[in-house]
Image (cartoon, rainbow, N blue to C red; front, side, top):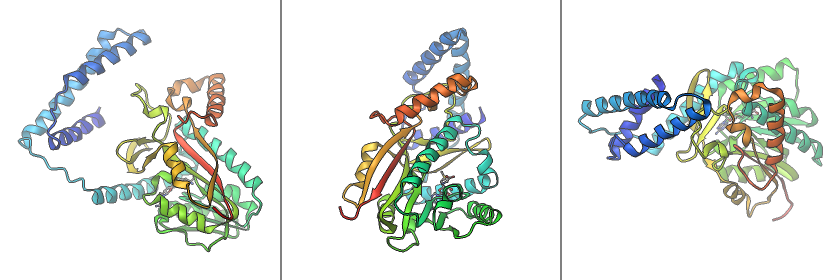
Length: 355
Ligand SMILES: C[S@@+](CC[C@H](N)C(=O)[O-])C[C@H]1O[C@@H](n2cnc3c(N)ncnc32)[C@H](O)[C@@H]1O
């Protein structure tokens, strides 16, 4: 409720700046009708459900009017692009600081779809590693605690991981030292600035779990991936899918994803220890992603989206093991279909010798 009231105040500011009315009867009616229908299907009295929502909406309206009165309707919200991006970057550093100590054990733990997606990615990565013609170096862009490089690295002569977060890199370095791993290099580095490796030196580039969406200059980074990959080297890049089923409608329960993209406003809401922290991210369609790769030496061999149905179901569904396994299998088969409705877009491909 506190979060909702806080958001209602934020919405009021935006409405005042845009000179929109605070009260929107049509929207209110729509929401109340919707909640009545859900209540009915759940066997609850629709009037009870509507009255509950009515009080919540009433409180939000009251708070918005108090705010409007307090500033005579004159509010200026400074949301220029540069300071907004600065704020989102500061949030990313803050978020990764909070996550770093427990990221490996806890990220995705309470979000079933995120966990299943990690397993899905790992399966694809495992197959890619096996199929590579050479195992020179693996590079994880946005490596966090170094999971990918440490898990898949032993097949490679060298492993590199870059992350903008000092706290994540500290944990990655500790993990590497604990395992006495040699030829592992984790570095605090902003990959918007490029990849600090030589031309044609890498066998596999990984940028997983939607990290492709975190990058503002994605074309520049793809050019860098193209540059560092050896011919026949492969890449695995993942984005948030603007067309995912999960973002198509309002659901009366939380998504089972640890991070949800705002498809219109270029930010990602990441759950972190009971808080929701916005960080920069751009949502892509499959077409838009495929366009990013055209005209390059990088040719796309597989595009999949995942998870689809699993992401929109309520968490309770997963307490029944048989149902959970069914949903998992269903999403695996949907992933490779030609309806791209999964929450993440996973693009795999290879660097050719010529375009
Ligand atoms: C979803 S996590 C990736 C997790 C990791 N690869 C794994 O499998 O556990 C995204 C990571 O990308 C990092 N990141 C985001 N933008 C970045 C940038 N511009 N440069 C370097 N790292 C970045 C974040 O700090 C975060 O740790």
